[in-house]
Each structure stands twice: as structure tokens, then as C-alpha cells.
Image 1 (cartoon, rainbow, N blue to C red):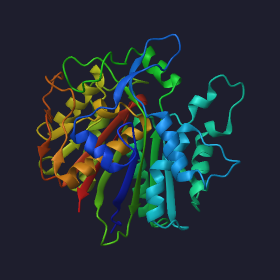
Image 2: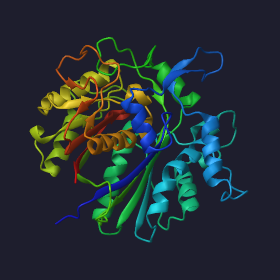
Image 3: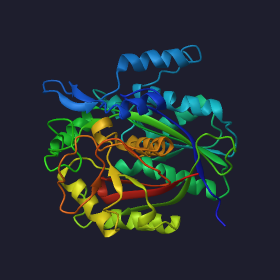
Length: 382
């Protein structure tokens, strides 16, 4: 019999707050972190969800100023990682049987601007090792970097690593920051929205880029006194190899990922209480998801996207949105898919409109990304 794996703690650093409670309060109030920001010189501002750099610096100095080695210089993204991990590392012991997984799409790519040589921190393995060394992790860090499914996949990787018996617990951290490189790339696709995004709405016209860091603690041996306990029942990641950037028109990869995850979880479509979807607010992504959910007979399950609150945080999105879905279950409250009014997909979906009370036991979290990658996990509230 395979070990049961649980998420028992989590934290996040986002434009809406630097801890879970402030994020939850902001979401309940319907606040969005998305606003206009000047990101590229000689270009008009973009709608994006950006962490206030002054506040980030203040919070970092508050928690790490005295402990920081004078010889170590941390990037803005690394400070986001450290702040999100700190509360978890303080509560749980790190041993030789503790895994450390870092999820990111672009890492410290902003360091490449105006550089003729490659800084060491640009390499994701070095970034992960730097964070691991700071907190004293004893095992070699694992990097998960698979486009926008990275955050969800990192949970699955940690689960499977613990189930092998080599590790007893794991810390998973995910993060990405807004950079000129990322904004320029999505802008070249004409994929960036002209306003705060509207996932699944018929007037949607593109994404907002966001930034965040999020962290979870996972274990096969949860303390009975844990306030939070979610069992990871099933996971799957499928690549349909459809296109370098375009989602599959048939939803094959996402459909297969959901089917595999639900099969492992032994949960039927009728048992799922809530879907935390990817919902980027691009025409093709939202349509692909609608097709995949309908193929799985999930079209009547309450569903939301958090992209209009946080923007698309790349490798952090999946982990951050998983955390918020668990908060929803704990607070017995479904959050609306912000800015949604009229369905804009060819297949029906049960998009949540307005805060709703609900008993949430089984959660389906999905993600999709460039290169045809798709991922899904099923969580059970214990």
C-alpha cells in the first residue's frame, strides 16, 4: 500500500499580502492585485499584478536583516522565495530525509539584462541551491521548471518522492517575478489583455502577468494537532505536444491529466466539490479547458480562475492557486471568478459568481502551459 501524503502547512507572498490571512481577506473583499505598471522603457504601461518592491525590501530586512551574511546578495525573486518559506521552516524540522523542491518558470532571468556574461544565479540549479543553503537543507534540491504547470507538478513530484520511501517530508516553494523578458514575450504573442483580465468571459482579450512566491509543507506523517491537513489523492501530468505555445483544440492533454488524477484518487466527477482552474483569459486556453472539463463530465462543478486577482504568476500560479483552494475549503467559501459575466466558451461551465458558502471535501486543481504540458491533482480535506 502506497503512503498517504498530506499538505499540512502553507504560506504565500503576493501583491495582496505577505501571509495567508491578508491574502484571504483581500480575496473575500474582491480585491485585485492587478493595476497598470510601467515595465518596458518607451512602451505604454501594462496591466500586471506586481509586488511593491519597497514593501518587499522592508519585510525582508525585518526578518532577515540581522541573519543575512554580508557576503550574500539576494535578488528580488530570491527574497520572495525566502519570505514565503520562512514561516514553514521555523515550524518543521529539516533532516536528511527532507526533500526541497523549487518550482519556477524563468527564475532570475532579469539578471541577464545588459549582461555580457551569465551570472551564476541565472542557472536554476544554482538558484535552488542558494535557497537550500540559506535554510540548511541537507539534501540536493530538485528544480521543477515545466512552463506554467510547474507549481502543480512540484506538488506531484514531492508526493512521489516521499512515496518512494527516501524522504519523509518535503518543502515545496514556487515563484516567478515580472520581468521585461516575460512581458515582451507574451506581448509578441498579442496575448496581454488591455484591462484586468476576464477568464471565461465572452469579452476576454488576454492575460495579465503576475508575480508571487508560495510554499507548502508536505509529509507522510502528519501531526494529529495540525490545523491544516489535505491528502493528495491523485496526480498526473500529460504533454499533448500540440504546439510550442498554442493549447490543444481538443483538450487531449488536460483531459488525460484529469482522468488519470481522478482515477488514482478513486473520485468520480460527481464527488468533486470545486475546480480551481487555470483560466488565463486567452481565447484558446479557456476554450480548451471548457472542452476538457466537459469531456470529463465536470461542467456542472463550481469552478473559478484566480487570474483576475493575481495575474498569471507563471511557475508560482499552480502552487498559489492550490493554497487558495485549500483556504476555500477551510473557510467553507467558494470565491468568484472575478470579472466573469457571460460565458465565452463553446461548452458550458459552472463559473462561480459571488462568494458562496459550500462544503468542500474534494478539490480538483488543473494547470496548462506552453509546449502542450498539462497537469492535475486531486486533494481531499481531512
